[in-house]
Image 1 (tube, rainbow, N blue to C red):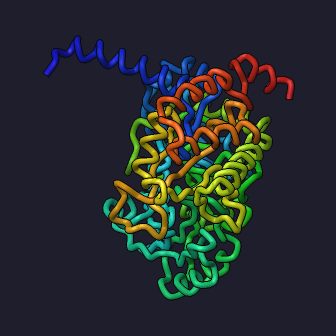
Image 2 (tube, rainbow, N blue to C red):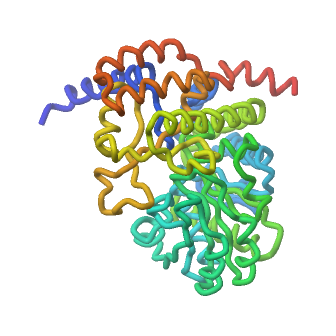
Length: 445
């Protein structure tokens, strides 16, 4: 093994190389990633001391700091309360918790808390093969960590969505404590409103994992889970919502059952699953929320348009894009079957060699044991949209992708064009350039 100083030197160099490569030389199209504005990045850089501090304790039923077990908290508690209220205001919630350090952590606390509140270990979820996140599944956090008994929604592959009528039968038969919506391969709004009544019949709490679509919800371009019947939203804060890495839970606890659930979720956060809650990210979360308040409608609309245009263009040029009869997508991502071009593993690698970053992805009809070489790609458009891509730019980008997918040109040749494109679209749009700019807007509003 190399000695420690040499390892540190190489660590620093690898970090610099990464920042240049993914930050300036690649077109990033991973659907689970996001990009922060200069102001959000600056706010993170202004929060170094906060990022070193602890704030263990209890919160009240509106999400404010109730009790902390450390000294020196007076400004830290204000910061947490402000961040909580900003999130509540943006999403029309009366309660939120911003202590979660990731979307998976948000799911852990919510699933644990709701199972305790319901005194019921059964949870109905979207099948993992049809787009659920691994944290929802019996093979992941829900099953192997929390010990929940998972029952699948009925999924209609042709519609690329939950079959509400058939899932209602499943919910009535299973009588779960939790019914979960949302996911990772997530093209269309889930039928929350259609299934809310049957969830009430069996006494199930309704949870919605918005990690992928939180920015689209903020921009009014996908669905409004809390108004459609979800009791709680869980989410990360760094995908279509362009904030720092972290997590959040929110809801409108307007009944004794929901207030009980909030208390159980808070118990699952502290003391069960969190000590340090990485508070250094909260000021940047607030700046990102202000950006979504101001720019979110236009940003979300353009993300969805870009994804739909890409789906149509790739489809017209001989690539199988799923859900064609439904317009391909209503979210930030499309699902593409590239079996005819060598499969997901080969195509994703070839695109990476051209500095276009997507991820290979299992499709619902794939052999689910074939995750190393699936049929599909999952392609997200939130990053390129925030860099200023519009419909014509997306078609040009698709032409470059088609050159690689169809082996018209070698990836190294396409890479030259990609590098030129990254230089043309190097500025982050739909956000503030400085914290001072954000504060000036906030004071004038």
